[in-house]
Image (cartoon, rainbow, N blue to C red):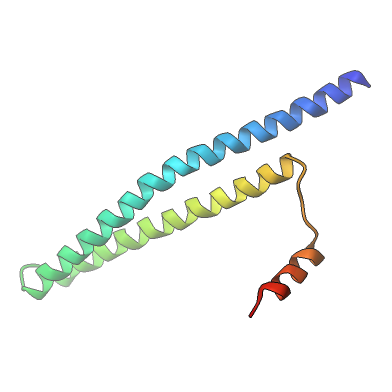
Length: 111
């Protein structure tokens, strides 16, 4: 019984540490991806200016727009992974919620 308890406790500690590390790593990724989003939006804006001035074809604008959208999608994916890691951390710490209480909470907070 003691060995089983010890394994359970060690497993719980490992889940907590894994999720804390994931959140920390994803925070760093989020910062660098936010910078990439800003850079791609600026590049898109510059491509649009060059297109309006007649210096480039619309293909350059489309390529920059695609790159910008990919960076934004990547940023959203990182945010989703951060939220999932946060939920798993709460679960690993013993927290939780019931679907009924979540529904009641959203009804109370709506205007």
